[in-house]
Image (cartoon, rainbow, N blue to C red):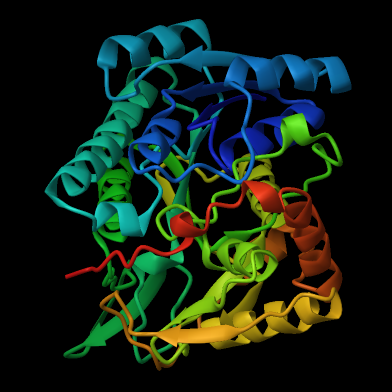
Length: 382
């Protein structure tokens, strides 16, 4: 099918483009380099430099024979959105095009305003573009398990049946985000659900856990095709950050008691989850929700895994609990359902010692590029 990837320059966007094109789909990517600009503004460069989207598309075509079309522009600008959708009318759209970092959204008023305006504006333009140019297209929106928060009951897969005063109904599962970024993801879901009901859109909302890893089947050892790898506390996910800290001989920064528990997944599984969702689309007038993760870990468990594997490689990995800069429960119940993607055929890639070792070996290669000051700055929610 024709698949348009919004946010195709990002940590997940570019690997998704390669993955889908390698499996026969006609792929186009859109990006305005927002993540690159914000990293420059906050002085938090990724571990290694990443070629431009056009350069990566050329490299991918030279290595694989598969072509990815590139559009550079701001999806908050309707004229640009219209240009893209008229030129490449998609059958499936993958929506990654958002400011992706909870810590960034909590930095200050300017960062909060950018997050709110960018994330909701792009989602609204996407909805209107699908309505006008390709009403039968299937939207796959990348949400987050952080929308749910940490309730003291089991987390269902997007929906919950409620019995109240002798009557029953089905509702979106209650959500209680812990950052502005996660709150915009809730608002995305609400916008999409409104227009699913009104306009009959087809939408799959993937409530994704934190992603880790670098290597995919498509990138293999070609470093020109590897995704962004941030290790700072603003844009770097926790496990990626721990791996770099281990290599740099910095103590692993565990916030508070370290009991914060989440569902995690390998970057390879993100690609497979998106592909499986596209290839088995939601029905007209359906908001389908999958909880997208493969394993559950606490922060302490992740730190201990990194410490064990790092020490086996001859690193001296230490763990250092810090006063938690965030507003979050540090010990809590956590039991989310996640059967939908497994039923579609997902075969998980689990967090083995070998996976961690491969990540560390690549980071060791770039050890001299690590900027220690980037790792932890104490961004506080309050």
